[in-house]
Length: 331
Image (cartoon, rainbow, N blue to C red; front, side):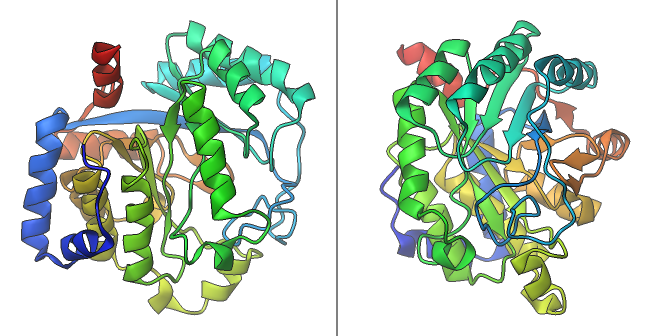
């Protein structure tokens, strides 16, 4: 897998005629992934609101006036009950998110209990808790955490326009701690925040040139929430919303440049047409979040997803991800 992509090469991919881009993306996809299979994941907010970060897109920021009320960390037993329901609904991976800048050491025993409990159910585990110290990453690894999510959000150049309470470099530092602990990386970002195509090129470039590609790459479309900086800023500017075809192009370029990664069609899917979602799958997206809620925003729901899968002839994925299989073979 290449990690030496240049921005010009990535820009050239974005500029390809749409049919040529889709053909290349689907050819790349089929070389590394089973055709017609999409991984089902479930995301649960285990600690909502009150985050001190000022991420301009986030309704859980203490700086936002979104009406989201801060809650305490959920009891592990309640989390495991939700995980069991997700497994019964066909989810392969259970993702848990806490609205923190970083977890406190006093919270780690409960977090560890959640990871171990979900693993015992036979599901993959993923956590997103903010920044981690090396010691905290080690504790999560010892508990058996499969994935840690920590998105870079956007291009390095645009980052400071979206978030000011931590730097792009600090994002990368946490990713290094996660890698050093032996945990798989889930890292992507958000498009449709009023950025340019050049920013989308920079976003993909930052991911595709990491020393090792993320095992999972979530591509989110901004859900403008009233009371957030970006939600209010873009509410009356419909042209700022990313074009559906441009969104599909972003997914396709992610697939081509990171061929073995799971590319997840994440937030924003509830407002996408079935045709746009189908194009995203054709472009190489092979993971989605199920259920009717993602942290604090809406999602399409299991029934709608089942109907779409039936219409497209898509099957839920049951096998292990290619990058993990390859790593096990090398090990």
